[in-house]
Image (cartoon, rainbow, N blue to C red; front, top):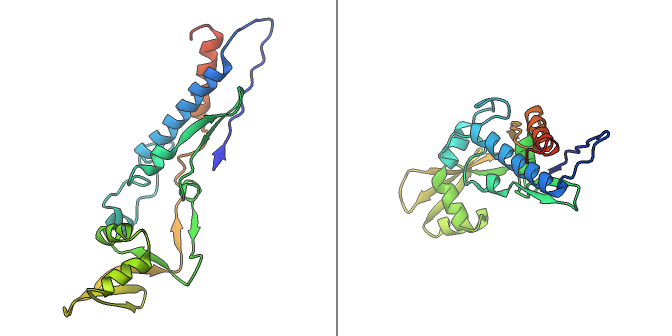
Length: 202
């Protein structure tokens, strides 16, 4: 997702020599920092305003901070100059849009979304190349697997106790946690960047 802020100045009876690309680059770096800051605080207006992680999400990633897990989302936010009069703030991280805007996820194929039941299963899934098929194949080599209701179970060897390894859901709702976009405080700070240049402060 990309969002653009168009900033225009009308100058009257003044000749001002400012380095517009430099200022846009500075504004872009500010917006990247602002977006990361919102994720770190857990809210775009005040800390902790976002909906909390579900109990299942906490168990999967061993953390209760929304949008904070591997750090890949934060590190993916960047700014890019387009020509000499435009800067774009963007992220190419898969899932960033629905995390920002909220929405419902449904399976593209099959009836259910297969959600790891805990952190260990998630790590095993990662080591299997994020392929559920590969992971189940490995598990079947050491035990038995079966589906029961909305859960997929695994039993190691001849043990009697079955372990839930996947939760099966037809859909999952993602609450809006808006970390990306221009808010009033961002406009104020970007305005300051340009005003300082006009006043000869930078």
